[in-house]
Length: 250
Image (cartoon, rainbow, N blue to C red):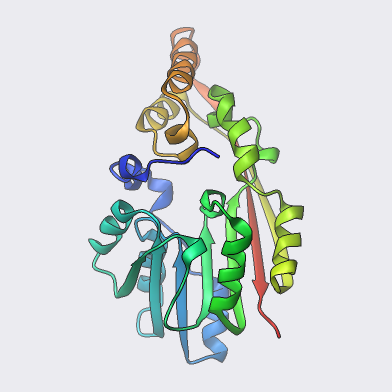
């Protein structure tokens, strides 16, 4: 499995505006309605954007915020946001806290975990009884026309190794001990400026582009430049999101 160099990605990560705005987490809100004080872990928190937005929307609530990431460079940027949170440099497979958590989220990162079964076991053992684990990620098999895969088909082949499909993920969640598993899929199609796509591609901040060989990356860049040169104005973007929520019930 290819790895993404987040030392390089960290330099441009927050320039992607789609990563800097999160809605209030309704499941966390519901949990706070029945539990006065909670501990929240953002697993693979990156530069801390989810933590930043949730903290701003749950201001005044009794929440202990924790962010964990395998990249020291991404954590450095998270710490610069001056959040009221504890940050830990660790992989998911080595997750070890001095306290149990009530709420763990993992946004767009599970595919990076090298031993996903061990990671799920660690997540389960870190949760309190009736704790919640939330997973959100893209689904490569449902978005073969996504612009990244269109111009760099090599990255699609790599993602088939990195991403677990829904059925396998739910199966392994059950084996890890989780129950009350709910699944939601969101599918979007939209048309966007090919010039915007070109700038996004050159920024190379998505893991699929950051991990592939330079020769594969350059071939994809030439494909976009050819389309622009031949008069293309827009492209069809396709993305599928998978949301899974599960509880730890003894």
